[in-house]
Image (cartoon, rainbow, N blue to C red; front, side, top):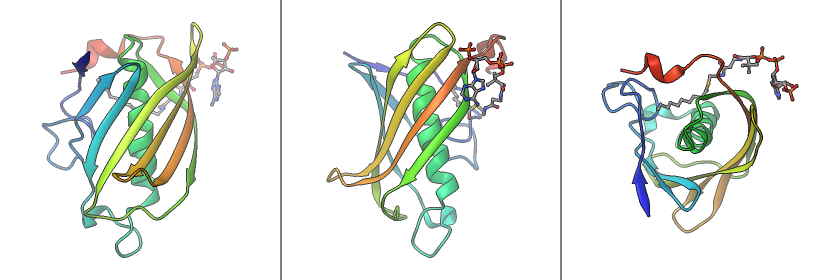
Length: 140
Ligand SMILES: CCCCCCCCCC(=O)SCCNC(=O)CCNC(=O)[C@H](O)C(C)(C)COP(=O)(O)OP(=O)(O)OC[C@H]1O[C@@H](n2cnc3c(N)ncnc32)[C@H](O)[C@@H]1OP(=O)(O)O
């Protein structure tokens, strides 16, 4: 079954009301989180290549969404990113996230950014820590 996600409408990545944001729409299916995205050249670092900070942001968000979909509000405590290939601007990309391991407070996740043909552009691993305060209360 495919389920639509929760969102914070001003989130830089997923907020549909953020005029400066990336407006990524996520889906959750069979324990995985996914999204399709095209990053325009306003987010390049080197010519034609998406800035690594933006790639990291996309991977971070994808993992956060994976955790959030479980009803757990958590923040990124640590993140490690491997940039395998330059990420092209103005090109369809695929984000995939999954929870690797979760205990009561710490959650380990992984995410990948690929081309539509499956070529891996970047991979991330992160540790999320459950928020002591209910983040959801602050969402508009
Ligand atoms: C619907 C809308 C969805 C929108 C999604 C948006 C997603 C955005 C995702 C993000 O980018 S969140 C923003 C970036 N992250 C932060 O701002 C987090 C800032 N850091 C903190 O708030 C605190 O440092 C943190 C909550 C992560 C930990 O503070 P604590 O005071 O709870 O730490 P504590 O020392 O008690 O450690 C608790 C556990 O976490 C572990 N831990 C803490 N920092 C860690 C770290 N950096 N790496 C790995 N583990 C860590 C620590 O070892 C320990 O494990 P154990 O319980 O097993 O002992």
